[in-house]
Amino acid sequence: DKATRPEAILATNTSTLAVIELARATNRPDKVCGIHFFNPATLMPLVEIIRPVTASDETIATATAFASSCGKDPVQVLDRAGFIVNALLFPYLNNAIRMHEMGTATMEDIDVAMKGGCNFPMGPFALLDLVGLDTTLSILEALHAEFKDPNYAPTETLKSLVAQGKLGRKTKQGFFSY
Image (tube, rainbow, N blue to C red; front, side):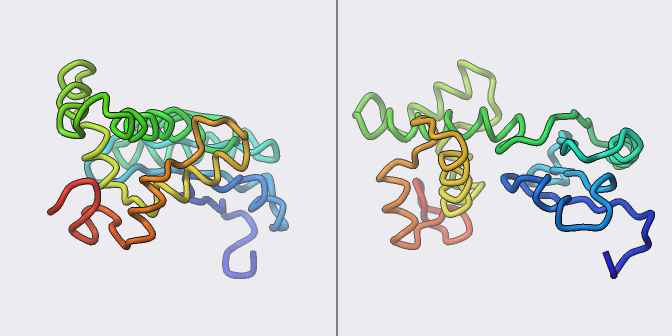
């Protein structure tokens, strides 16, 4: 609040934190929203505009216009853990790990199947390594704490890789070696 003009909108790029908690910590909860860009932001066109219950229509309209002016495709979503994309994406990633743990298919075959069968640009294991296994673990833990849904419960394989410091592309070792 002190670092900005009173009329300034305060936005967060969080992928998991409740935006309402940030809004309540300010003197202007009507001017707080989420503007969630996806990694890598230079390539990913989608931006989630997160609306806590305190946000004004003007704040959301301004945030949406800002995202559009950046050449992005904004979607509006109510404030909830995981918003739209992560709430749907992370159970998918988690279930890919479970499928591999059960011996259903190799990681490579799972990636090829999801790319070819669903027209995804990359398979779940390549995406996990890109996102970062530590980031994935953190997001799954937050979603599981919020919803208690077993689809969000991190797998032992994921926890083990993170404990070993194998975090994906950033450490050159994750599900795959780089």
